[in-house]
Picture 1 (tube, rainbow, N blue to C red):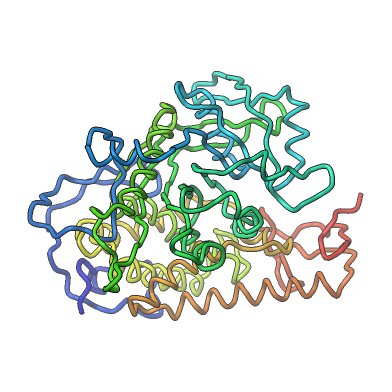
Picture 2: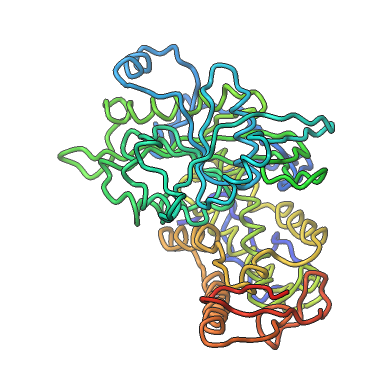
Length: 487
């Protein structure tokens, strides 16, 4: 069946002839009206065009979040539930620290609780006066007192926090997907069907991974909200502080709700949202959105799932293509541009991911979103973004140091979509297999070897450093399978 909005191969953008083109499908239902110029990777917020939904059938895969509390159904659900206003934030990246700052200064919202997978920041919290420093885009610096973080990682003497101290969690915001599966598995007594989890971070597919590995029972698994932050954050360089963050550019927190799938007793399809269990799940979703909306600096923007994907997927496509090729071939960003073979592979993989995005069931009722991805301008601007990138992919450093590469949230997400829709994924699977092979080789090197020097990248055949030039050997020894620098 043809996919709406997929451009013919003659309209595909490339500088060098790619090794193959995406399948040629006839473009249908796409407006020929010229589009305004926009950068898909530098637009803080996408405003969807107005649409006429009077003749559109009811959506069963999307539940838009609204903060309108006036409906009688919502009020009935709120009155019957013991909803908590306490928000827990799991993670310690820049997004987590910015969320803690915003929620701690939000009027009417209880102080948020930070959950950590490593105990070291707790000591830094005490040494830095129990405050979080945030520098605004205009240079103003504010200090916000925050509660003592709780350690929820591996059980260690002196760092263990009893589950009774944390208490049941109803509103959980996760900003970093690294190690989140094992962390939630260790603390699964805190999370149940009354919990709403908001996933904010790079990549997608974390929700499916958690349901497959941790929350396998549909009746007890939590409700999910997907989010993406367009604020540009960086380190606070004025002084070395662990609890600090700098806001370089304001943006928005875009949210979309994912409905719980309650199956009818005599059918295999999800029941209508008017049934009470689905209303309860939607009520919890709206309650978390209301709490986050209480922080004006977050600038929360609820939206439908298809519009959320239009905001989220451009950066994911670029990151998946560029980081995968850089890590698989051991090239810097400039190396991809200078190599005709790597550049052709970049166009191949980009065309393949565009085809996969266009096949997503969530976008089949949104031809304007499909046309955005399949049009010529999207790939042109992605290539221009590659030209502006300097240095080396962060995946290179992760592989070099023997750490896990987040391919599950990037490559794995698109591979699962392609498997469901039947879209081609040969290039994606090949690149993913190469990266996994390099990771396995590095793991074996760490386990069996005790090298006195480390190659600039991963193996002796690689010549890449952060600056793209061969560097000096680094004195390194391995202790218990982990690299440790030697003074």
